[in-house]
Length: 577
Image 1 (cartoon, rainbow, N blue to C red):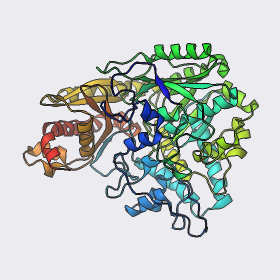
Image 2: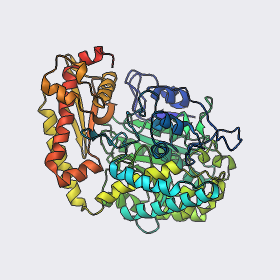
Image 3: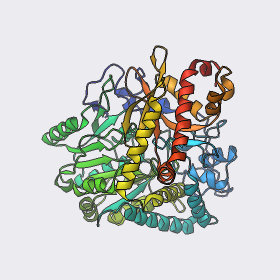
Image 4: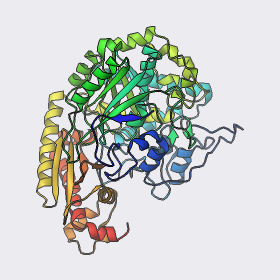
């Protein structure tokens, strides 16, 4: 099975974001071959080893999830400890996939992010990609970690279950969810894509399921493979490194779908909602059960024209709103749930939890159906190479009580790392909870206008797209604009002090080049150019509300460094850094 493409793509098209236009890693073959896909996403490959608990005597592979101590040496934990991080900081990287691993030599993950708050004098504007913990989030997660220390087995399970119950309740309150709506917690927004598939299996049994994805290239690279039940990473959160030959989750076979790209090759936005309406109509006519997606803010912030509803309260189709960036109002969320849409959300983008933590918000109508429906009958679906590789019973709400025994797993399998990351994310959400929506909206619009003006004042920068709290910027070179490959270098240099690599720079330029200023990762938006992003996150919005002058000074540092990198790109490239 695989994905067909609704929009006819140009040569080399049909790829999720992250690959270049001329790459073949996101052709249809790339989507079908998850190993090809995940390997193409890795900018660096490390030789991973499996480490078992010395005291257990077990020869089986340990998962990522258990509270990592000196007695529990896991791959992510040991890789983080090898870079000098504390037990708590190492645990922040556990219970995820390869994107969270701390890479040898860099002390950071593949996004150049460390499991610590940024240093004094550094600037962070990369919330649209992934976040180091904020100081606020770090402190909240560390307090929770201390409550877990010393617990193991059933005692740890009970503590993790209580924390997830509390976190779901707090998230329900912060988002002002309507009565009856429920939350499934999950390791990331990409992992969240498996849940609508599982829900569809519960509601519709063996009926043919087909899934429609929009904004390919501007959603997470794992979303399209996950949407048809495929693995997207070399690792699963509760299993660890996967066998090379494995492609699909057990119990998710036979699911197919379509992908609709975000933009045409000239960078213009595709009318994905029109294509999605046609997909639903044709699927229903063919006797299939369609899952229709709408994206409310992809990597550059663009929003599909329409968020699809679940038809007949999920009886005829499921509508899924990908709101993983977290850049929406409570009123918008209420509208989606009122039309019975399932909503995918994370606290690890705008709300700046460390990578990653996701949630699936289930509207009351569908939660009620789940409560009265039996779980999918294929028992293998709940094993370690099915949903059990991503979820335990503890992340599930009351409406899925009948699923819990199937996902209980072994004793002591609670995903402590996920609990820590959600605690950090909830701290970020708490920080804005008392600010009226209108005030937040006005501040975001004002900030985006100010930053866009800063960018456009630089002769070699262009704020080509501005969507809410994300400003997308292209960088000029002699014969056009920097491409995806070149911006990967620029993205890396933005996180470093590169002032000593450009002897010909002015003193002012060297000052800016010396300051680490984290941006969002590059996005390949057209054949002619790619972009980097400056994105407001919860901490910079809180800062802007209290001290706009100082906040904009930080944005100016980021803009000036981008301009200096564009000006001296060839010199920096020749340095080999």
